[in-house]
Length: 333
Picture (cartoon, rainbow, N blue to C red):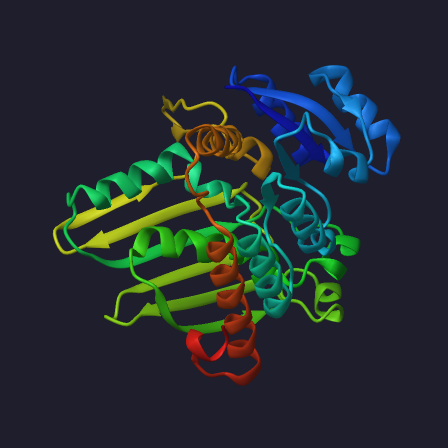
């Protein structure tokens, strides 16, 4: 069975997903939609397909599924449109910046029995998968604490920060999903502290560039998350999981995994400096998972509900910063 795809949005993430489709024998790229025709032309020149409008794709009988790689403020409308059109959907996070809008969108998905998968790509990173498998195997006993370090080499452009929804909904949302993925229990309370330490102008947009968050489950399991928009040494992505019988960790990755020892000491190459290179394998694996989901007619994971909960945790973190108090997730969602 070949899954026939359309890609909505021919930017950098659209190109990454187009490559994943092209490399999978069970998939075919049929169409691309983008308001910038040159971007769409560049994508199909490499990966095939043809340019179509979104209404044309919605009505196309030769398209089974769409990859939504457009700006966040378009996601919910597109999901509803294609749910009603009977297409399966993969959507980059978040579904929307508003919890109520996400809820109404997911209701349309449910009413139309549509298939939806949300793009939390880090669940598909081979190193983080190995952590999850170690937990599930019981190797380190019961999970008690998770520490996540997620720091960018530098801030995104100001124009992006203006519309991103803030650091919690844009950046930390990946870590919130990863915390749920590894803790195996749902988050009950959120406590967050955030500052502007990297660039004062970020504060002018009512956003932060440095944050620490503590998530706690009903049984008392904890996850601490450290975020910064400035890591001069590279893209810092580490996770440590402490269990009742031991500890497992996933360390930073480098484009070249060597170590050189001389009389001057031990030297290793720099870290990755961009999420697109650090998570190349994860991006490919998540699209392969989506294709397998459609081929096997199973439910997508991460699901729309996963997207809703991660966004709710982000909202709770924002409220916690504003009030200086711990926030119960049940009061937000």
